[in-house]
Image (cartoon, rainbow, N blue to C red):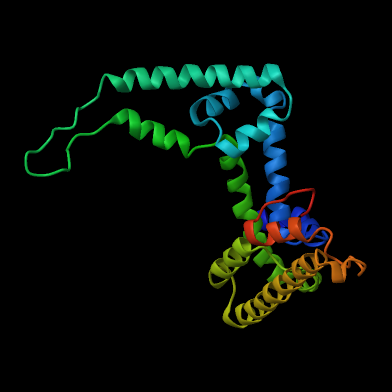
Length: 244
């Protein structure tokens, strides 16, 4: 409960934001902070560099880190990560156990520690780890506030719903966090918010499409101008063109 109280401020702020998914807003804020941290003074700290050297960055976050424009920091982090990978792979190459072919089966036996190492490396990321640890606590806090704060429940009900991924996440986690009565109300509100707001964005897309027809060329734009970025948030949990 102590952690939930600590995280109440950023969670409340996200649910007071005018966006298509407050859970995306929470995640985006954590992601931005983690990227800033990776390219801030922290990269000169030995304990942080030890972690970045070991896990590196995923494809998405290495792009975000590079866009920070810290050339020296990026070069240092990459160089020492190179040192780590080269050293690890060189040692693992010595352990190579060549697959043994069978006359009767297409399958081969044997292990390759190098490819196992690289597969694990491709799934590791300093930013992902830093975000995911806190994000899980934020999600727990949503349920804590739902149970303990009338104001939060009202703000929850006033949101523009959630992206498909985070709608599923909240539905999955709710039974673990809420009692039966509270759970029933939560799911009822959550389901209605999702469908109502998906339909709203769908209708905005439909109006955008109609305006390409010359018969609707002089009709008002309504809410169709930014329908595509909002729709991408709803379906893909991606923030484009500054939309939440």
